[in-house]
Amino acid sequence: MRPDTDRVRSGLARTGAAILVVAAVAGSALSPGSAQAHPHAWIDFHTQPVVDETGAITGLRQHWRFDVFYTLFIVESLHANAGAVEDAALLEVAQTSLTNLHPYDYFTEVSQGDREVGFKTATDLETGLEGEALWMTFTVPFTDPLSPAHGPIQYKVYDPEFFVEMRHVGDAPIRLVGGLADCQATVVDGEPTVEQTLFAASLDTVTSPGFNLGEVFAQTATIQCAP
Image (cartoon, rainbow, N blue to C red; front, side):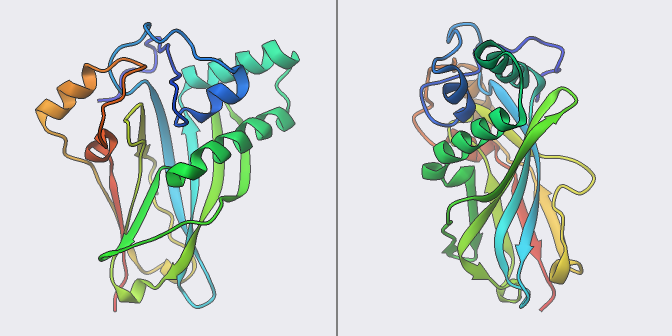
């Protein structure tokens, strides 16, 4: 269960590339011993499949919204380094984030039946501050388009180490447009066991679970169209 946002969250950095922005801005981690239990940061997001003129899905547009304490760290770091939070500085941070995420497929998995999808370099990056939250929007293009007529398409967006909890949110967590307007989209929560939940709670900010822990907590999104 996600903690109340009024609780102070600290230690929002680790040595890997998953918490992407911290190393880009600060060049070092926050105190690793000041927070216990995975996850340590939270991203709410919604997604929109990109559809071409034939009705095939060619990519996934993602809108990430970072938690307020992570945002505060980024904003304070930019103030300390430059004295102001400029749009150009936020864009530079976001671009570094995407570069760091590229080897990890942008925390994204997409499949259709037994077919797993590869990804090109992310495009169409936008970022900014909305209220007390930093947001980042980008498109992950597929190496090959997927036809919804060939069966359901499933995808997950998650941090494999579960340092970051990532969840679809909103009244329309998956936004279907164009040729997908008559299709159905669902999001199903992961079903971790009690043992897996307790194991995640035992990990500190610098400890890797040693396996793909994030997948057991990840939501599965499904897009299904009538034949």
